[in-house]
Length: 191
Image 1 (cartoon, one colour):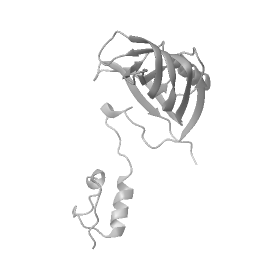
Image 2 (image 1 turned 180 degrees about the vertical axis):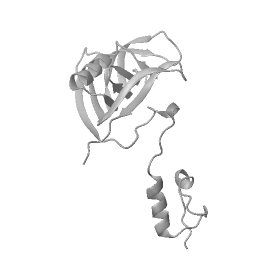
Image 3 (image 1 turned 60 degrees about the horizontal axis):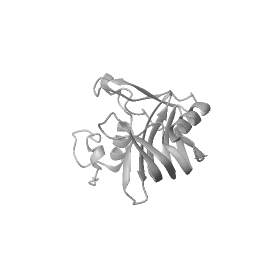
Image 4 (image 1 turned 90 degrees about the vertical axis):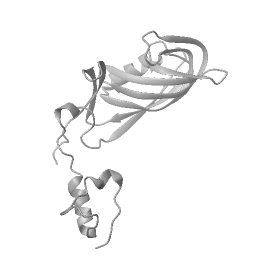
């Protein structure tokens, strides 16, 4: 019997027999394979994660001067029937930056020349949750929740990833008091 170190994430799962920290190599592999099957989620955890890995495909698009960043991304997702997308990357510039700062209801609207430093978030069926960071000529950076009115100045080059067989929905979560992301994953086709 040879001692086998176990990653912290697997320690609770790799209990075999009497739970000893030492097990034959074959048992270690069996323990990992057997415990890789995800147990059923309690009702209060439903919709919080995919039940298994999902394949991802991607699209790339470039927005033009005057395009509204949010409206353009939502329109693209709707036209393609995308039900679970995420922003993989985005670079570009804005002439108007309209964001909702953390914890505030009133939008912050900035006019000028801004570089898109980052855009991240999710797009789903009729709903989205996107955050943007942008820097001005002095390299000071602002960020917040993307609202309509983020207007492209020269370009916005966006890559969107799409999770196959997954649907993102936004609905009220009583635990937070907000519309939150709920994830649904369809069963894989037989075969």
